Image (cartoon, rainbow, N blue to C red):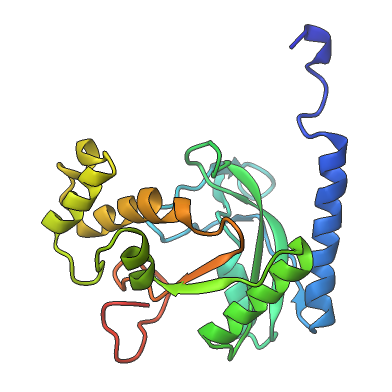
Length: 233
């Protein structure tokens, strides 16, 4: 790129117009359903408890804090929105900037826009239906398909992820040319995530969205176990 062109925005104007239309349609979707739009803080004195998320940290040195006050950019609006839920605000949604001090690539960016919403008293299936409605309205896509985590593995990798031991998971990884990673990995959850990422995800969501439900219980930080099903969520 020439020196004279470095000032130009990285996003083409047509993309910005499409983005604005998508954001407006998302807001219309929730407003029509009586969901309140909220705006919560982007910085907080406390940060996320999820060990897999890494926040950006800054320091406030304004009046009353001459020694400095540590603040964190929020990795998501989850905690602040749940405070509103606990106060009885009812269903809420938010479109906001979130920040994660992690990798950058096709699927991740350190600063990004997040849609988050909460529906008190909705069960998993009712919320799945609402997500499906949202995607169809905003993206004009086909209705989604739904697969359990177990069904997805059985369909695309021919293995039961709920009962397979680490040796069996490594055998599947070898068929995907992932032995260099899997052979030295001792954590079963990491092996499952490797197979899901490399062996399942490339095959789903191509022609229409795909919902995957009943994940194994161990990776879930704030999710609830399904009654009568100790191995999945």
